[in-house]
Length: 413
Image 1 (cartoon, rainbow, N blue to C red):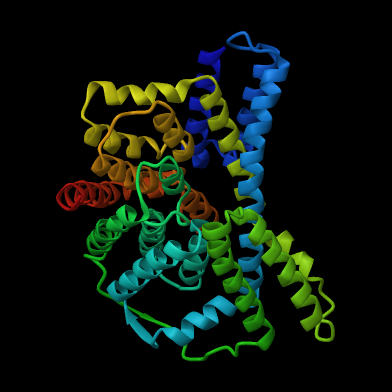
Image 2 (cartoon, one colour; image 1 turned 120 degrees about the vertical axis):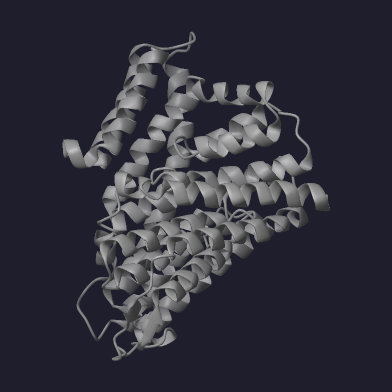
């Protein structure tokens, strides 16, 4: 049965890759196979487990999935409202000049995504950064490059803070690294983003003209955006000092948005603020659900444990490098958990290298990170194949960031 489930997971991966060929939506295929794997686990229990053990495993996975789902729903509702009101595009028009060189815009987007994801979560940083791209009328190939840079920069920005990336938090809580150690990741991570931006902007010689007309920013939208920012900072503060789960704070912020908007709009519109939930890309959420169900089953049948065998046949720095690339195919959370549970012996520099690898390695494929999956749903030209055409650029940038991390950590620590 383990082989059958592994084969089904591989089929799901192929169906995502060839979505444009088979014309089956990736959310449908992954959800079908994800649920099928768990049904098979009930029908044909493995390793001597019964229905009670399978139910316990399923409930544990569903709790993790529900946490991510609710967090995504909260963040996407905020962004859906601000986008529908044109707030993000209007704000960008006010910040940027009337004309901007394409290379300058590449630097601006990369820097903004990197910094914003360091303080906010990856999902929010991706949604806000992509809102800038989708508002521009540019060539398809250039839009793909901007979106690729956003995905890589968002994943790179969060690895140096325990609130920026889940795997960073896991490694920190395991006592493998400290907060001052993690700050060493800022420079190498930023270098990787700079290298990627430089490579992809080589043939960009044009200028982008922004609309000279600035749409007025309504007071209601400014207040809602203030609630959004307050929610982001409250999430960081409450998680860092009181260990309050980010999803709880974001749901509270969403409820504040509903109440504030209800009061502000009581005389101006008849539209219920709750209707903006319907504008969320539920296709993205269903895709997440299917992928995480598949990965959860792979974790339960022990497939992920084979990856820790790399540390027995090669040096940690090379195993960590490959582990990061593996996270483009398999969720980085169970990968990190597998290494931590195996109690692999590594020095501090290697643990920092692993932190970078598991946080940024998922950028290699569009399905390897939350940022990539969201980008695929927001930028219509972006799919598995089109993103794969950027793999060479991404591999170089990832390699630069990884080996700079390893060298710097060995010299400083």
